[in-house]
Image (tube, rainbow, N blue to C red; front, side):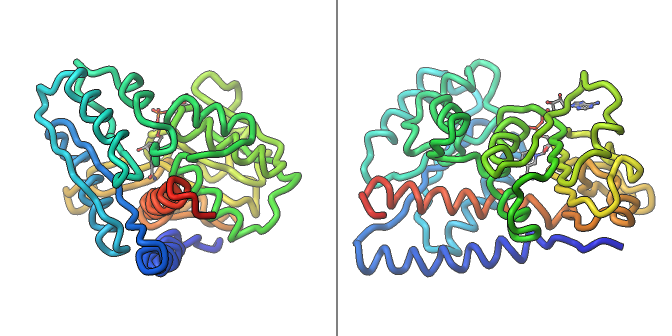
Length: 290
Ligand code: NAD
């Protein structure tokens, strides 16, 4: 049985450190880190994610300003709010919960955010900065996954890393971060030939696919470190209730892997902790504090 990588415990430790830093920033620098969280519409999953983020802010002493807009909000109205938040010196981070309703172009909205306030790290200039190794705001889920990997393995240099999934918010930035750590990186996706064989080469296997229990135990190299980014809701046969599972067949893969993140309690809590990390970093950056 492999070692469980406890993302919740790591996230709690990171948040405790950030809470101390927020106290110091308020006391010594009169700086109160603040994030504006924008939710458009009534999507229940989005509302849950926003609620979890705001709650973490409260725990850390980070100010949060919630903007809940009607589902019929136009792109122009949302862009006008973004401009207002860009120009507000008291707001250091801006997060627009995705997806936005279909009348709004999500890319246009993300790219309207001041890149220095883009705490999700999705702005095209932050993606470019990451690609060339001049990291500014780094997307939270890959950043949190990297922190877990470094905590588990130390120096990642020379390791074979396989990232399954090539989305702009997880797969591609994850691959860029692993490349910066001098891993030999393969990005696999829906057109990859013989995916099981590709995965079996991985010392580090990151699953970001969105298909429950997709990665099988016999795709995992014995002793490999497995990071399961997937969050999928499935109906539990026994209870009839919905439960969360990852993209990896956890119980079988845990017999083969050296270490593995569970779902829930693995990458998910790290995503929110890294949002807090980025918000504090953005506030310091905008105040000129090293
Ligand atoms: P996405 O749908 O944008 O991308 C999925 C990727 O998987 C695509 O690049 C696609 O090529 C690849 N893929 C699809 N089918 C495949 C197949 N049969 N074989 C190989 N590759 C295949 O999803 P995303 O936004 O990157 O999210 C991926 C998963 O991570 C989802 O379950 C999502 O809920 C979860 N997620 C979790 C967090 C977190 O905080 N833990 C954050 C973001 C996303």
